[in-house]
Image (spheres, rainbow, N blue to C red):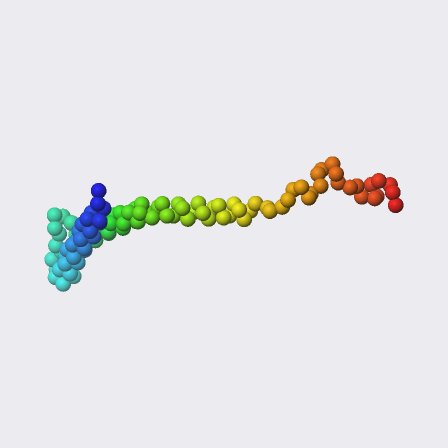
Length: 112
């Protein structure tokens, strides 16, 4: 399903609702008459506009994430692999003495 036409519809509907609410508010400020359309005031139209624009923004963000998710996952995997290589010590364990091969200090052996 194409998301772009739905986002466009929500943006256009929100803009129309904002225009209607603005006209109602202008009439209420300019005259003594406080108009309502189907019982809805200018504030109600503003809230419906905000809801439409919020849904359009959510759809746009969701679409962007779906398009870029494979690339973001690849970048994260590469970064984690680089960090894992950075944390692994590059020491040769053959050169280090084993636990039983450690020399005892002179004070412990009683020799001077």
